[in-house]
Image 1: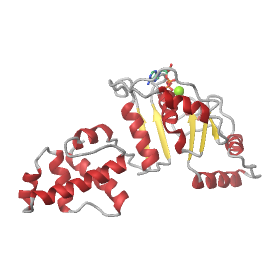
Image 2: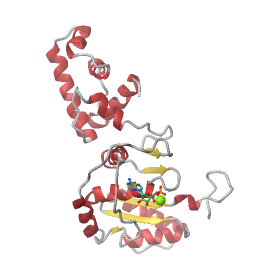
Image 3: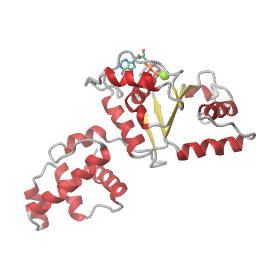
Image 4: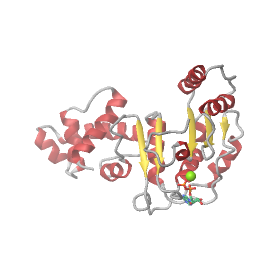
Amino acid sequence: MNVNEVVTFVDKIIFEKTGKHLDDIQTAVVQGTWERRTYDDIAQEFNVTKNHVGDIGAELWQLLSQALGEDIKKTNFRSTLERIYIKSSPHSLNVYHIHGNNNSFYHPQTLNHSNQKTQETNINTKSNNHDLTLAPQIINFHNRETELQNLTHWILNQNTNLISILGLSGIGKTTLVRKFIDLNIQQFEVIIWRSLKFPKSLNLLINDLLNICKEQPQETLDDKLKQLFDILTNKKCLIILDDLQNIFIPHQFAGKYQP
Ligand SMILES: Nc1ncnc2c1ncn2[C@@H]1O[C@H](COP(=O)(O)OP(=O)(O)O)[C@@H](O)[C@H]1O
Ligand SMILES: [Mg+2]
């Protein structure tokens, strides 16, 4: 992550939050803080007082803390951003990928979440529009702090519509998502977990999703899709499609799906 990426990243967050882009002095505070310069130093360059720079910094850290759900200050700005920054997809600002492989998907710190939330989850899975009957139960869970923070930020702060979690079999994709649900179950009106290991037709899959949402499926596939999109628009929904690779046609190029 270089200083230009930092400024772009912060600008995007501040714009989403306030509707305004960073001005020159705010940009200088972000750049200067990233480069570990003092407020005094930044103030001299811009011919303003140190207090003025301090006020601008305080406002920025507060906005960033709210947007990212982390306590951000001058002293931890760089380390926090380095930890949570993930490149967005070039195709869409609202679609992100976590792409793991054996080398890069591992984080050494241990995550100590209490079991209390997992227990709450088990109670809540019985809630009407939460269908986690096909989701695995987690017994042990370690690390993945960064990945969980990224998912939380994208889904809960940025309302990202589609996230793909990719990586070799056994790397922990399913477990990561299940843990995310355990920690955030209260945030969603609808949660549906389905595996596509033995995929059924789109028609049947959508019937299934609509039934869980207590909707009588319409006749045509088009109408059913409209019905489903209405639900997705009006309620906070999380739909997990695990083992997605099974809807590709084996030995064909990417993008060739089974009917
Ligand atoms: N963060 C983790 N902490 C502890 N065990 C894990 C973790 N992630 C995965 N595992 C274990 O590794 C195995 C494979 O994980 P899984 O989520 O099924 O991988 P994938 O979905 O990528 O194929 C499972 O037995 C799971 O319990
Ligand atoms: Mg899996």
